[in-house]
Image (cartoon, rainbow, N blue to C red; front, side, top):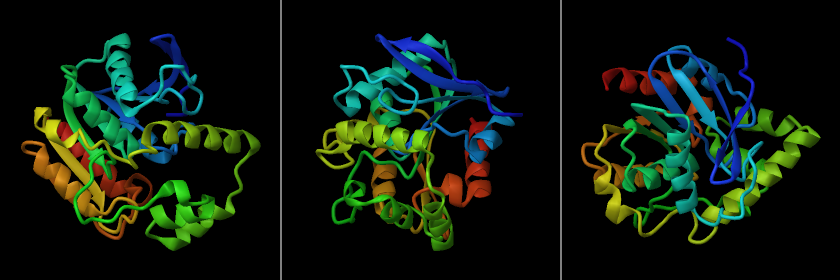
Length: 259
């Protein structure tokens, strides 16, 4: 299919970069803290049966950094306006980690264009007594070792030196991530009391060996969203779309087909 060229759309004065390709049900993928600068293999797979839309959040990657970006709530409203700007209808939203948090924040504010929701190792909600990793304290090597269960994959990722462009993007992404997730760390304590407002079919996909956000956090989110289903992916850490791509893509595509 090839890598689609980035396009841009103005959201509240901010030029947001995005890629769009494929045909079928509309799938809006919301990336995590690592961004979506590169066109990943799992994106290619998702585009095979869907109209795939992948924006880079304000402050991340090719998108501009607006003055109004101060909190996770700002990213929630950006998603709502992005869907309106592109006139996306009956949208199946898939959010990974930070992207899942953004998706939940958008949904509780009213997202009538959303048809279903898939949360993949989502940040945003803390479960009492369940530990949480702190990515702001990790260097590059520590991050890979923490988010990947397969340490051979982690060491291979560490060995690939980023290009100067990628290193610059990584720094930009880390700064944007800190702006919205630094304090309180990786969650919004006010969010859980409004998760009952998410009324679309919802599934949670979680790496059974996730050390950044262990599955107990997924159990808490599933408890709070009416009808939500939690599916654990074995032998997998925080990035199932990379570590267990076949299983993850099948779960996403199957859930969309059901709804």
